[in-house]
Image (cartoon, rainbow, N blue to C red; front, side, top):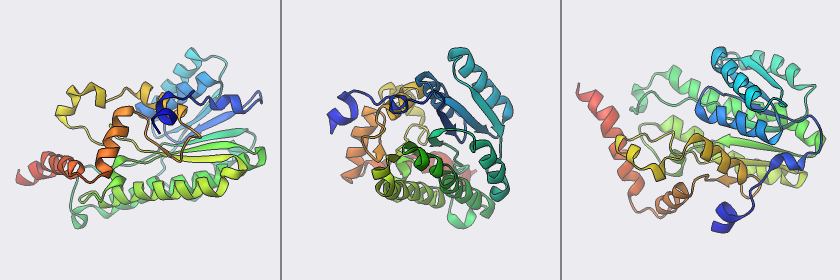
Length: 279
């Protein structure tokens, strides 16, 4: 297990595709993770089609990609995934039709503003989370999958979260959307792996739990560069990717139900919801 995840020769997915023009689609590049996917896939030789709700940020990422990897072409589109998905996917399909798409990174996600009781959470917030965290992922994959099947190969990367590993009250809808991604990715990988289309979900950790005292634990907080590098290196080895070695060991502790996750959850809840409720 340790050899497969951290010691084996890293996967270079571009080597699987001899075509001159291959594309990676990233559904959101607003955050550091989306930016790193763009840069590192471009470094491997992919052209990048990126989406963002902030066109200025996307253009900055595009400029950075072209500066560091001038051979890679980029396409940038502004989109609000909370909008009319049927209408959005019509023009997205038109953009994808002429492209040789081999990688889809479903990075768009909505997190709760704060932990709260289910009945106290605005219904609009919950519906947006379901729409972006689930519907956008499923429908973008359905849109891209035929291109991969036609070319007999591709990778789908879904950004899940450590919160799905245990029941997590006070963020119940968010927790459920991330658990859906994990289960669905497993099923998709089983259905299409014999056709050389691999689906993996990433157990993201550091972006979800930002306790102040964690800032001192550098070994537990990998840089976005390291995080994405390890994610791409593990593609094809498993349907579940835990990029950083410290998170892998933390995952093992959590899976043993030693109370660590419940402790972290209580601390998180007290620091956010509890303090605000008392004000």
